[in-house]
Each structure stands twice: as structure tokens, then as C-alpha cells.
Image 1 (spheres, rainbow, N blue to C red):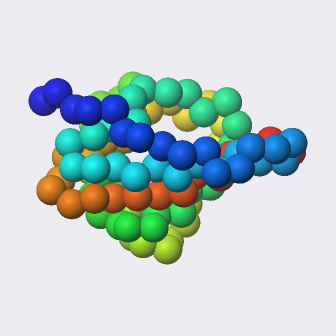
Image 2: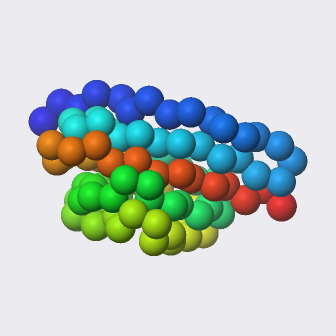
Image 3: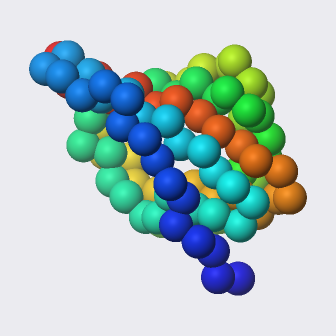
Length: 95
């Protein structure tokens, strides 16, 4: 299935952190990327996303307001294969 590239908005980028809003419209994806920094994600509009990484693809439920974090080095693609908008705020920790 062909997906569109998700829009994103960098809301803050300073010496300490970068904050990015990722609204995932139905049928969109973040594109494959590698996180050079540890990060925290806070779902704003929850839903089921498809997470693709080197081990394959799996569905993951993002609950609105329930944050999660990952260490630097994560490489993946996050896609919205549902019919509803999903969005999250990603906070990358620089220091």
C-alpha cells in the first residue's frame, strides 16, 4: 500500500530539546528514520499505528496522554493505516 508522507511541525528546537508535532492523517507515514537522540512521545489523538522496523511490522495502540520513551538508535517507520487521524508530540532530549 502506498502511503503519503506525514506533515510535521517543529515547535521548539534549542540546546536542550527538539519538540515536533506529528499529525498522522489516514494513509500517511513518518518515513523510515533513525533517532540519534533519546526521545519521549506523547500521543495527543490516540489510535492504532503500524510500526515497521528491522524485525517486521506490528500494530501498536497509542493511548492519548499516555507517554512512552525510547533510547537513541531506534530505527523505524510509523504509519497510520486506519481511517482516523492520529497525532503525537515527540520530544528529543539533547542534553
